[in-house]
Image 1 (cartoon, rainbow, N blue to C red):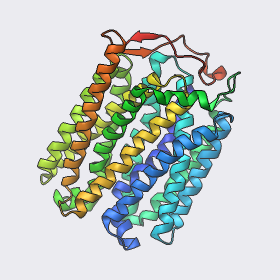
Image 2: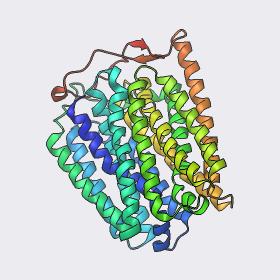
Image 3: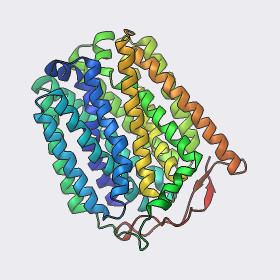
Image 4: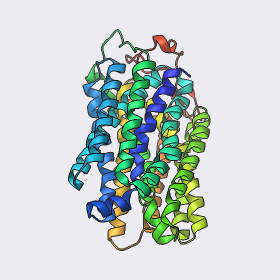
Length: 416
């Protein structure tokens, strides 16, 4: 695996910490800004909305720009957004800072994913994405609990300052260690890249990704009040449980990244099924502290076990447009991260309690499972009874790598 892929994973640590840390900061933010917890939860949706809009928008806007320069500009903008959040005097300004940060985060994900995919052979795509997603896992292991700890003892703004500092470190890594990625000899053409959206498998991949992610984060976004108000844990235990979720995420990402390259659909179906079971169990057993803690860990495993396969699937069905494939995957994940917290806030406002977010999440993942089964059936028909995925000769080494050729689809090989 090229060193640059690991640098991208390290950069994602800062992005992921900012994206997910609000799950442990909602109570203090709500108190400080004098808003309800569901309204504070909309800050999570604000970030996700920015990701949804920013991923395709910035992918298109930067299609012909140098990859490293684009990454530098985006991580710099993201860091400035964190500083704006730390200094925000009102809820409205904090909301706006989350959207700006998310736009930059989305662009970094889209461009970074296409660079990572271009530097590895197709048989290692899920592993390359697992390295990047590993940055999210480490963010959940270290960054999110650290943010909750800072919020508990030094105020929620200190968490934003810390992520701003991490962004500076990420910027240094990108500037010094990401190689110059030359643009392809033939300039990308937007009209040709947009043809990927004619394939219904692309839209099925979007639906599966959005619902699988949204189901888990419908519950995860309100995990802190669920742990304290329903399970009866003290607030000081919230960072520990968030850390356990992150440990589960790291384990899931590692296993899923290795298995998905050979058994992509098996990972999708088994992972989404597991998430559904764990969410139902959390809804039923939320009053038990032991069960709530254990299920938080298991949700981290199942959600991130599925994530490399969800990413790799999009690059399989949209390989002729790698930048837009990365952008579409990012947008799909964050459609879920927008809809999940919104649905969770809706059921809470309806008076159904914090444990109802797990029921709502399970409903989303159940629909995702059905969509994945439909995708498998369609792909089996196309492959004459076999699930197929793209494959081609490995691209040049990392120092010479550029975006993958976009002129034609790659040949197929069987992958169950």
